[in-house]
Image (cartoon, rainbow, N blue to C red; front, side, top):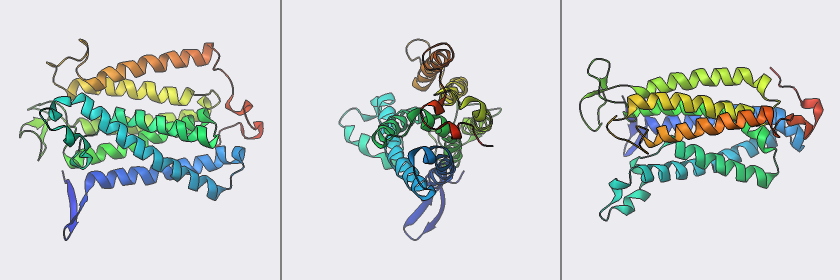
Length: 276
């Protein structure tokens, strides 16, 4: 683990921050390519405009994600800010971010931006879904290098994370989630050429598959003696259960309800097929 990759005088380059920056650049660049290919023609945008607007969207989404991730962390760990320490809740530079809070904050920000720009929301969410997984994979590399977000103590299969809360060996669940994110990213990107014609289906599949992945990993990340709502080992596992339920409901609605329609009936049928 290398929380600080290198230093330039008093300035430090943190591995976690670098991984977040890479997640932003790589995922948004790929998303901008797809937006210029699929949404740009519908909106009358030139490729350069598509790239510019995508990075504008990404900037707002990152701000919303950071806010949501911090709010979720403070809510889940409110006991850390009791006794006159509530001002520490604003010290985001000291760490303390939760992915689900960031996902909710980022998606809500993206929805607001898309509505304001009059972009096709369903198409935007479905195109973006695989790249959320890719960005998350970069983030888990940062977690591993930073020595945070590890799992439960395991003397047989664990490893010691310098700077952690103790010096016991913990399961490297960051790497488990990294591998899972990459597998789901590949599957979602491959299947998108089939699922893209149904509005919100690709995004719903992302929510479902990641929810299952996170639900399972939480058993090895958390202390089983803790209980949330009487059934879950962590707040993130409870959120995973909720997202799985909502995703299954959405998928059933898409195939049997009023959401079953082709994205491209809304716009231009000439660009209705996903290019490979």
